[in-house]
Image 1 (tube, rainbow, N blue to C red):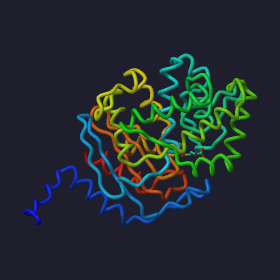
Image 2: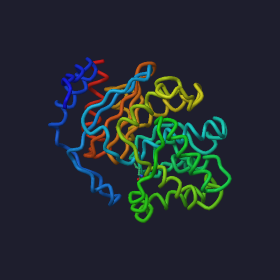
Image 3: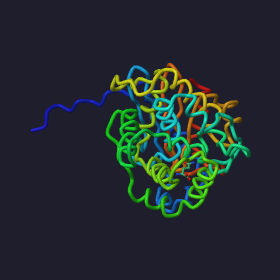
Length: 309
Ligand code: GLN
C-alpha cells in the first residue's frame, strides 16, 4: 500500500532563478554544433543545462545537467594549474606566456623568435602546458591528469573513447602545431606524446554539474567545497583565474571581460565554466556555438548571471 504522498520540496530562490534563465534562453536557437571533430556532430542542439555550485558546497541545477559531454578546452585551465603546481611559475613561463592572443583557439600564435605560445588557453599553449604534466611515462601522466580532474569534480571521471579516437584521427592541425613546438624546442621530446595526452584531456567526459563544482573549487581558493579537499594552491588558483579572465574566451576575450567580467573557459562541445571568486562556480552546457567557438546559450547565461547577481 502506498503511504501518504510527500509533496516535493519547494524550489529554493536560486533554483527558481536558474529555471527562469533556462526558460528564457532555451528559446534561443542560434549557433551550430561543432562538426570539425566528427564525433561532436552527434550532439543534440536542444541539450541545455545550467548548474551553480556555491563555495559552501551546495549545488543547484536545471535542464540537461546530467547529460555527459567532453570537456574539450575547459581542460586547459585545469592542466595549467597542474603544470604550475609541478614546475613552478618560472618553469611554466619558459614554455608558455600569459599574453592574450585575440585570435582563434586553433591559431598558431607563437613568439616569432622563441616559438613560445602566447598563452595556455589557445591550443598551441595548451599542448605546451600538457607536456609539463608530471609522471614517469605516458600512462602515469594520464593517471595524474585524470586524478586531478576528478578531484576538481569531486567524483571519478572517465574518457569518452569515441571522441578521443575521432579527435586523434582527424586532429591534423593540432598535430602540426605540436611538431612546430618541437621544432622550436618548446616540446623537448617526441611531440606525439604530449599531443596524445592533449587529445585525451579534451575527451574527458563531464556534466555541467561537474563544471560548476570545478568552477567552485576556483571560486573557493583551490579547495573543493563539496569534498573539502585542496586541489590547487591559493597562489596558483589566482594565476589560473588570471589567464581565464584575459584569454579564456579566445578572440571574444576582450568583449567578454567588458560585458561579463567573470573568469571563464569555453569548450567546443558546448560547455562553459565561469567563476565568481569567493561566491560560486557556474557550469553551462549547450552545444550550438557562435563563430568564435563559444556556446551561444552559455554566453547569454553567463552575461545574465553577471548582470543580475
Ligand atoms: N579538442 C579541441 C581542439 O583541440 C579543443 C578546442 C576547444 O574546445 N576550443 O581542437
